[in-house]
Length: 199
Image (cartoon, one colour):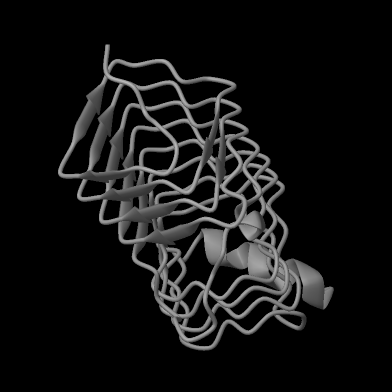
């Protein structure tokens, strides 16, 4: 069985159908690695680097990326419930970290206060996710379910919300200049203005 060891470097390595739940890993660098059908639930990745990696059909719920750097990562069909993304290290000289999520569940996660330009969510569940005070300029958030997601003092300039639903975004409390919304769902943007719509 393939294992992961602390203080090691893994390059162009595949990890398939492995269980690492509740483990703790320190000072590991993963570059150009692929993770498929792996269980990383409640794993602590402390001071690790993930560069240009792909996660497919993995469970990372309640994973902790404390002090870790994340760059050019793709998550496909993954479960990422309850992750506090603010614990990772996000160098201020970067605006775009190349994070992409497709067909993932990220319920109860937090991106509070983060600057993540060109973030990509496609057909994801984002129930109760905290986006407050973050900057997600020019991100793509299409075909997503934002039920009870939090937006407050959030920079959403140029964000594409087309075909997404269930969001509540106060146009007076958030910057939505140049953002794109599907026509019917965009009616919810008027709720914070106290406007009554009549058929």
